[in-house]
Image: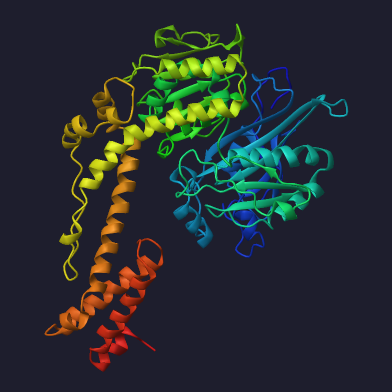
Length: 580
């Protein structure tokens, strides 16, 4: 970031000159550390270089030049924000090309058990930033400007913000030795296992967190006090590793939550113009979390600058805007992205008569100047009616200063029930496409999941639509028709179809293991027996890799069947199938 004068920062360059292979060296002692973080970066402002990457730890983790440049720019507020003191925010960058090491087994186990929305990112990095800018007469520019950045594939915003609050102030005072000690402590942490409550010691404090699991009930807080009686000092309990204070983040747009939920559901391009990276990143993360438990399948950038390598890709007018939620702070984006269909401008939180000031819904044609007032600029008309009772309860709660947790729980429950009411009819229809179990026979190829016919689904809504579980009135059919064209329908359908195909394979394997293989082998040719052995082995490999939901007894039976089938073959074929 430049000095508060407002000049643009110069292009960042790396001081370290490290090679850019994009992977950690093979012989790494940081296995436990990498279960949580990829690396820790320190970004400083250098008078000669501009933003510069001062340190990457562990030192053997290598970033591409493009990744380094993105981290440097996104770790500092731009010159329009004027952030003095300490600021926390986050960003998300696309992982650049280059060979990547295979995913560790622990990563695959985590992704199998974690909610879809909390799986590790495979193609992006999250950056969690603690930025400090304070006057310092000993520095030539008159300001101390430095950021500590945690780079991770995990969307654990709440955990990493809490971690930065502990380590960043200490690091800015004591520098490198402190950071090395903290990284060594993190390298002793247990791996994040979904469903478990973990104690994570760092700098004399124990952070206690529950890692969410797919088996957790929505809205539950299954944090159990685990072994607190043996912990001195008592642990700092985090209510969630990822959830933000939703009501606070969405405070200026509460009256438009319904419209924004629909825009998120439909994967519409949206620009959020905020006064600071903190407001920008929290607003984007809050909006993208509104669809839980549905996975947000579009791209999103909690904080984005004109220096990003993808700026031209997002700003081009030669094609439709991409399905991205973009958080920015530079008013220049109003002009550059004027062709985007939805722009949300928010200011600093303001109160009027004890109530949070709400942005107004405005036509995009009024979005012409860089000093445009706060508002949701869109021509979109919501398909569903607003829940006015919910809005009154939230605004009354804010006016009476009810606990933030209570209001956030109220808002989150509303959004959860809304999303579930929308998805349940889709789930019911999808389940009807699954072949009956009696149609699965052991010695024939299992039947396929039947195709999804949109018109058939829409016809089913009259008897089993969202009106059964949701009080909101409106054009549900119109919303579903637009949803079918969105990336979220594609993402949901692909995931459900894959799960059902795996379930069919598992049922087929169970049917084989329940049949009498010796009876089947009578009169079969050697080619047919060998074919069965190969197919069973393939299913066994997939099942052992936890891709198929089958019991251990079924796997054992399949192994016995393979041995029985091989034993019935001539010696020469046995030698081929079971080489010494």
